[in-house]
Structures are given as structure tokens and as C-alpha cells.
Length: 122
Picture 1 (cartoon, rainbow, N blue to C red):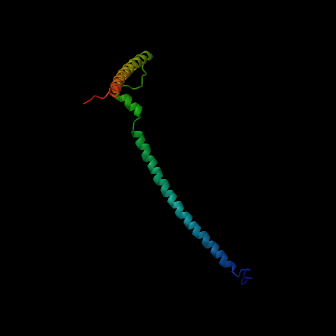
Picture 2: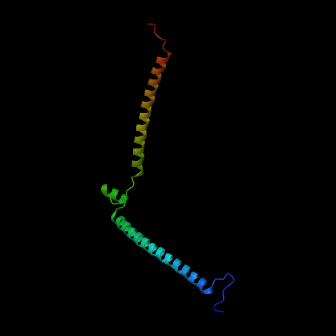
Picture 3: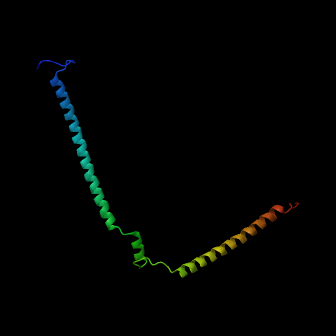
């Protein structure tokens, strides 16, 4: 029985050796990929630590702005102040629009007069 072969004339021991070699090669490849993944994990962890430290050092932009203005908290304006500022801005915009309309009308009148004026004989 030890010398018998299968139907494809390959010895059983040869088949076992090939299977064992394939498993060994796959395991070696797995170990290399696992090593690369561990290395990437360490690098990623270091990057996250650096990012966490830099974020902890940086200030909140709103807090920094409040400190520049000399305030610790944002204090909303009173509604009456807000409305009066809004009214002033709207009045300025209305005046600017009126001025622009007047200038546009003057320009249109000038262009109309220039176009409709009969040519002069020279």
C-alpha cells in the first residue's frame, strides 16, 4: 500500500508536500501583509496623536475673536439697536438707489437727445 499511487499516478506524499508548501507560502505572505498593516497602524496612531496635540493647542476661532474684542462671551445686540442700525442702512441704500436712478435717467436723456438730434450740415 505504501507504494500504491492514486488514479492520476501521483503519490499521496507528493500531494501532501505540495499542499503543505502552498500553505507555508500563503502563511509567509499573510505574515508580510500583517507586518505592513501593523506598521501602517503605528504610523496612523502617531498622526492622530500629533493632530490631537495640534488641535488642543489651537484656540476656538469664536473664542479668539471674542478675546480680541475684549469680551468673553458673545452678547447679542438689543433688538431696538439692531432695528435702528437696520433702518439707517436701509435709508442709506434707498438714497444710493435714488441717486443711481437719477444718474441713469440723466444718462438716458443724454443718449436719447444725441440719437434723436438731426445731423448738422457742414
